[in-house]
Each structure stands twice: as C-alpha cells, then as structure tokens.
Length: 287
Image 1 (cartoon, rainbow, N blue to C red):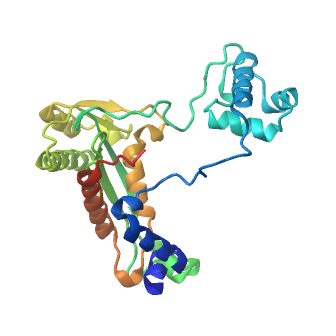
Image 2 (image 1 turned 180 degrees about the vertical axis):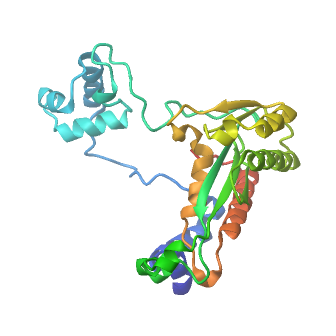
C-alpha cells in the first residue's frame, strides 16, 4: 500500500481512505462529490443574504458600504455576493449595472443536445524530452552550455477533438500544425467518431490559428463532412475550453521515469479513459 500511494503522490492514509470507500460503496463512491459540510449553523441567514444581493443590484454598492449598513463584516458580504454569482462592480456599467467586460469564463454553461452537433478541436504544442531526460531530471544547469543550447530537438503537436455532448475524445501526436496536418487529423477524427456511433458532425469549433482560418485543406474536409466552421472570439481561448482542458490535463500530469510514461502513452490513456467514462456513466466532467 505504501509503495502504491507513493507512486501516485498521495499519503498512505489517503490511499486507505479511498480503498475503504470503494470496498463499502463500490465504484459509485469514487465519483467526485462536494466537500461542503451537511450543516453550517453559523452561516449568514437567508434573509440577510437576500438583502445584501438586493442592495447590490439596486444601488450598486460595494461590500465596504453594504457591510456597515447591515451590520455585517465586509468580508462576509463579499463571500455572499460570490456565492450568488453577482459580478464585480468593475465588470459592470456604473449606470445600468449590466456586465460590460468579458471574464475568462463562458457566461453560460452549455451542452449540446445530441452527439455530433458540436465538436471542439485544438492543438497543444509540447516540447520533446531529450535522451536521458530533461532539466526536471538533471536540473537547470544541464541546459546552460552552448552545446546544449544549440541542440534543438523540436516539439510535438497534440491534436485533439472532443464531442460537446458525449465527451468522446480523440487525439493524435503530429510533427506540425500546418493546414494539411490539421485537415488530415479532422478527417481521421471524424472516422473515429463514426466508429463509435457519431456518424455526423454538424459544427466544428476551433481557435483563430492561421491553419484553421486560411487553409483550403481544412475547408475541403469540412465541406466533405457537411460541417460548419465555428471560430471562438479572438483572445478568448476559454470558449474552447472543453478540449483545452483535456489536453492540458494530459500534458501536466505527473510521470514516473521508472514507469516509462511518455506523451504517446499519456494520450492513449486519456482516450481510453474518456471512452470508458462516457460508456459507463455518461458523465460530463470537462468544462
């Protein structure tokens, strides 16, 4: 048990807690759940919270003014406003109170009604690891010599597609992100989706990279699929976050050199994990 816990980067007590939970309640007990306490006797009364929100929306005052007005600490007022999803004053028009500044989150959490109605496509640029390991294994000094600086080993490009409804994911590691590579990936990803029951793709959402906007190859593939090309708003990458999140999770996970974890094996693991999760419970964890 201690060796398994160490390999996963958790304590032995945490590993025992998860195993006992699985033995008592089965696989369902391993699903993420809220850590909020069942009872909060010292929580601000509902009437006070409603009054705080009403004053904020009617008079557009900050917590430093609302707190003394109601006899509540300013920090408590701030927490109540965040809990009710009230935007910051700096994001609102001072006259109308409407939100005028976009935040780095999608305003409305959405999910398409059926598989294939919308798919998200993105590319992640990942630096290759030199033979023998990189600076994480040998320290920053290993790249300080002129020979090391001149030795460029390049990058891998992880192309990924995620279905908005089912969260079925498909990824490939390609040598570049040119238009021909992007077009070929979309064609192969569509074939993979068709093999899993998603026979038609209606819309493809991408960022504004030149390979997507200016490539005739990409346009031809989308015409073959009968899919419309939808671009995110410039400088708003979070609008395509459902695929970005899956790629980022893959590329930032821990790896143990003794286990031989590579970028390829990581992508394959993510593909198997996402498919099994969708088939098992229909979960939609990516946001």
